[in-house]
Length: 316
Image (tube, rainbow, N blue to C red; front, side, top):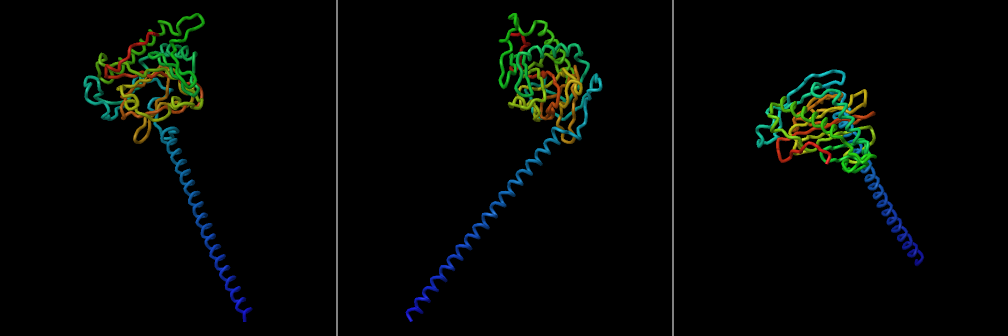
């Protein structure tokens, strides 16, 4: 009888152990199922993030960089005495400088303001200064007003540099050419926008740029982002660009692009071509990445606020 009782107890113990093991196995299976679901969810989340990134990247490239559906406002192959288009003015200008703020907003392209010979002289001036430095990425900047010159990932004062004979980098003739071109541009902007040139002032930043296909190293190299000059540089009211090289001949890529609601429009750089426009959010824009060669230009900016006016450069 005792053996039977002992046997029953043993069987009961074994049964309990089996149930406990079964329960543990069930819990383990459940944990594994939960873990598996968690892993699947993570994978799905990663896939969604990657898909969103690819979509966003492709949209940006199509919308801003590649531009299969862009319209050409000014082609490099054509000589344009004057071409313009009007756009609705933004509310970025305020009402303080009534004699100067734009009464109408728009975009102009003129190949008749600066001769090719003058443009070549300006390019030589830029090349002379930039020969003493050069950005580590695809963009090199030279500002004759502040003396700032890209050297690696920093800026140095070009006026602190002297040649082998201890002579200044730039001659008086160089500055006279620069002033002459600046004045031609100022008068063109004032005339086309119906402004008294005496209330329009040169402002910072006004600078030469050299762009190549080298990868960007610093934020200064990333010139291709869409932006609004009046937002980026509060003093801007009118922006102008004078091109010192020819698209297709001297470089590939590098078109200037106006961002429009429907179809973006492009200006193809041409030696001596002047493009200018009101600086508000009605004229958001960017420059396409340069794919090869070297693109030279000079940005000349104007303000209505005299406190932000800058003087002509003197080399000091």
